[in-house]
Length: 356
Ligand code: COI
Image 1 (cartoon, protein in one colour):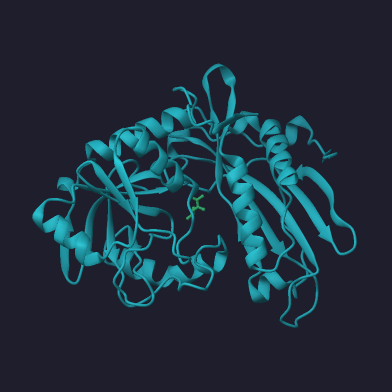
Image 2 (image 1 turned 30 degrees about the vertical axis):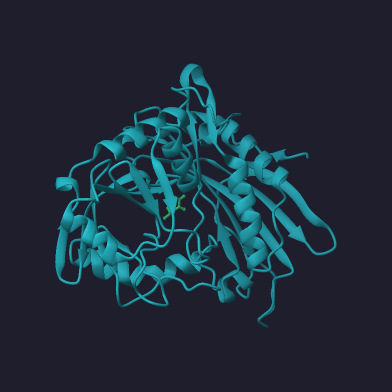
């Protein structure tokens, strides 16, 4: 595949952010973006790396009216000796493919996805921050374009990739966050698109999250749509509950995002001798475990969130503190092991890391 590269003159390149530990998440963007178009009868054409700029799309574009939009999130890490490392990028390519099929979009071939990202990140390598806990977040996005308002799949698509150097996702950093167990609003129902990485799921979560944040909580923990009883996910991350040497995470019943970090944590935990179960876990079981002390830790997992300790759960007017609102040893061990592999500081027996 021949990717056209339109280089900018040196003097037009932006200065790097002075203190990468203060980057926050997704506020600073690099100089270039990758774009490719799907055109009816032609397939995927015009793969190009050019200056990051505002998109020009038709105001009738299907993405804008009927939400034919999907995205992915992965990171490039500054490894030892200047190596650039990606973490399981082919998994993102495959998840995006599956998301596209569910939303009747033209899927992005794995090769185009991986080559576009590889070439863009290589060109932008000066933007990969080196401070601990920082990385270059990669946001591949697919939108339905076209120019007709009937409710039907778009006949044209734009695939683009943008890059943002990031630090921790939560303002708390690697400190326990507080969750509000949401009982009124729901995120997604089985049979819908809760397992698809589409913007609509995030839009649907905003009001509940805003209300929880007004009350001082970091995020909401969603319950299942049918019985309002089983823990699902947090929206920005999957959930794990730790019962001593056993981890429990909600099974992928169709309404939960199949997190790549989630799958990795399951494998890592088993390799470290933990039991790891994927099954429905009721909020009553979680609360009972906190009350009798058998639930020892909780954490979330995600590309942006990495592994984020959860320090409390607010449920039915009661705040339940988890592990004294401190980072527990299991969470810490899994976090250390995962990031050591991601940053190339430890051997990768799973074959997850790709040097580009
Ligand atoms: C990611 O972790 O990559 C996500 O897409 C979650 C988003 C809330 C930042």
